[in-house]
Image 1 (cartoon, one colour):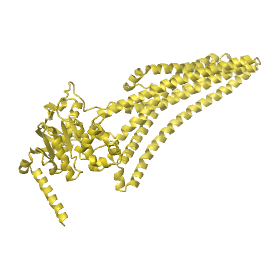
Image 2: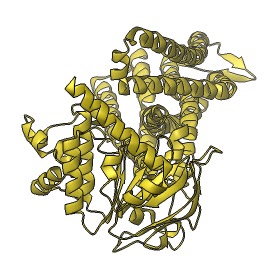
Image 3: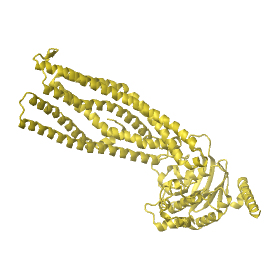
Image 4: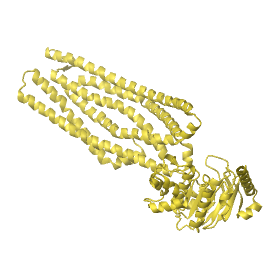
Length: 598
């Protein structure tokens, strides 16, 4: 069996399935050994001339009964063992999915999605195969093998010794190649991960590839990755087939020996000069030879199963190692002991000497940020590109750990709070405006289990996207496609904004979320924010000064540091960065005006 702390609990949970399955499998193994006996009896009866209709019918009925029991037993162990293995696969997949939700972005920065998907597919299927069919092979290799060998020794120990030779050789051969096959399987899975990664990235970026006419070069690059994957597959299969061929060859040679020596022993017995080995006279009738060869034929499956088990175990062991490594991955963002649950959040936000660097880097994205946002206040965040605006607001969602005592919501250190309660308090409209491949209605109502269409329409009106949606052929039932591919950039931004509004969180963050809309639409959205979210905290990150000019106060960041935090009027006097942004925007308006008059 394949043992692991993640598998053992499923063995305990589904022990009844395994017990019934193994019991029925052993029963089938025991009953099927009567088949060679009855066939041998039938041959002896026919060869010595003592056969009668009743005796032939009697033996035939016994064979039918054996066949019936074997049929029922095999149906039972198939249902129980394969049922248990599929349940184990489903349980592990659920654990892995829940784990994927708990892992922070830090983990996904260093691990590609394609690799994770291969763990969810091929590795879990390999584990399922071993816990199901591998159990069958293991029980058959042991119980059926032992039962057959005992019957063979009981019939004639000299011939039984001949039949034991392949078993010993297969065990030795399996021990030699098991580790090598495990390494080959890991190599094969690693190359499959790279193939999956490459394909996933190309499908995601297909529009960029087409726009730059890079289809041919990407096909050539894919061919190289695919060839490496194919080579590793061929290498593994070559080793596996060679292993199986050696086993089949050993079995075939021993079968030929049994038939050759067995025929000689039968002939000598019939001639009255039985062959003696170590003082033991081997007396064989034709029926006993048929019975003995039937035993050996039955023993072939346990021997093949033993060889196949080595290959299957090597693959399952390697796959379980990869799955376990994923499930053991450190969850760096998690609830502290005795975590405080944020409830009835007013919306106060405070940063106290916050310095933050992304995991794996030594460069501070933010440095010594100290400011306080009052409950219900609408605040803007501006600064040049790459100066820490998105980092500042993203930290409020606890996607990353921050130094203790630096970020507070309603006076509570978020590092001492329940993570889910912190995220419930914040509605984020991210820069990338990610949409699911679902209807517009379900994308807007994502925060609700069963969104009401009227509430969804109200949110769409808030984001000024209702008129666009109503123009679609299927209205709110229109499927947006993967990542919202069927919508324009502005429509995606506004659907994301509607989704955040419908959450009705005490704190809402717009991370440059109106950059793809025209000025008229932007003004309407900002007016809706002032009206609909009056008394609730709203943070607007913007690249245009006009977007935040009406807000009560504005945060100005420069090189990850707080340059100023004041009203728009005072910033025009005190903040060089803000002054320059206002100047450039006025200049842009003049240029645009000149173009229109030309």
